[in-house]
Length: 366
Image: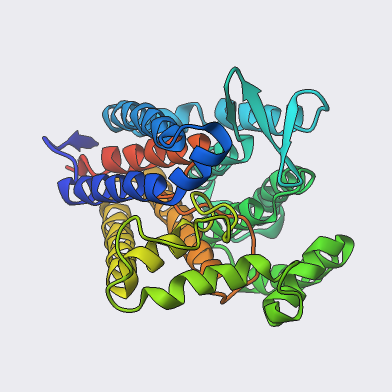
């Protein structure tokens, strides 16, 4: 039996709102030069991000007030809808191509990214499925394999766009949920072997991925080509020092660093706010992870635990990948930084996800 507490986790709520405010400030600071040049409107990206944030906050409050077990009841329908979106985005004339990936569907002046919906939809379905079928998860045929095939079907559709970064977040998050549900270690060892082979084939099948690997190993070998983005990112972070050059004073956003308001917004933050500013943001994400794990451990049922774990894992994995790319620890993958990067689908779905996490925090066992 479940009993709703009076209030959600206000510490988590405060962390979310601080990250959102920091993100809005940094989107404006990192984008106004490019916005003025391309759209003759310094506030172009800021106005749209405020609109996305407003829609996301409404979605967050809606999911925070909706009993989380509702998502378990409709998880299958939600997942089928997400698969439908992943299929139609591949249809020429419907799917929009940006940066070499056909990952968006245009809706009026705006667009949505189906792979963002799939991340949350997969978490909901796996949480419901594994909560109901947990006794079968140790069986390869009845538990592990069906879950695996579902995840890799979604991954395959995402790779047709292609979008390796989002696909990685989806797979890693899903595997973590399956592991916590009680899957055998031996199954994961076999999966890891096939996964490494498959990952190598994915890289070899696309020349641009090989270029990203070589650029990661030695970006200065091609400083004006494949190594350009990571070099400019490091040029942004380096001068930031301890205190930064000052909010709004970045030089790299003056057409040196591509996409300063999206995937590489952390580089601009590091340049303007320095080590202290960057550490503050990473500290907020660490606190978010801690509160999310606490909520997962205290959730009143298996579905709530898996759902909370999946949401906080998805966000944490995304943060780790984005920051690692920006500081040159891994090759460029094209992953946004939750709450901070410019983007409608990413921000709205992120806020929707944490709204579910806040709702789970309102329940306890009796």
